[in-house]
Figure (cartoon, rainbow, N blue to C red):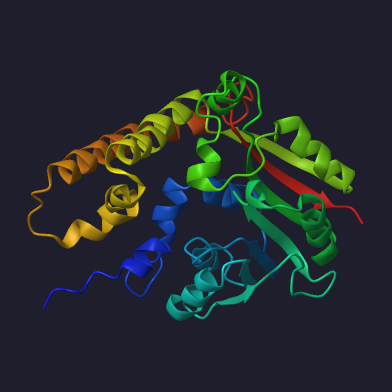
Length: 291
């Protein structure tokens, strides 16, 4: 009997009962790869803030076997699924504006594509500082949509498509730039240890055409409700179908297949230009808590 496809597990980034293989994640997720290559942690406590369903968090144990792992998220559903399908190696909690941990508790905190969703950035950073030990590490990846020479900055200026990231991704800080994020960290007495950049112009262009533009075309053609049937997660859900006859689904799957091929090029773009700030829409920072 073939295994029943589990939409919840795929949506939360988990496969059937186990997380994505750590070697695969290391190869394909620059955030994860850079963390492992940059931070050599032998023991201590690590918190993944905004962990979602734990797809990345679960794999950290493979590279840091002696580290105590924690994950938190504002989504009750995400944490519920993380606990349900997780390995038991990660202690998951729901967090609100304040984190449910005592002060000076963690050796490192991760914040991967999360800060752009946070309404109260100052409170968030003060909480990170509170729960980090003195000289504890803060590793974060932040989209900087106001950065000059990025597509998002261009869209903001011409006022066409400037709300796409808010509409489709829930980003609420179009004002973020590299310098502004670094200013925020220094303002909270974090010392910047390392800076890298990702998602340069090619990656942004691919994301626009393969993700944002595709969704906009679907919604304007079919309406928002019907368009959901052709979103990426719905296409993944349909992989067990023996035969797809819906012409729109066939086109959409072909569209996504092309994006997978192009993504090979964008991975090399990130590797080759990770020290070049020009046109980079994401900032990758390793900082140290000095207090």
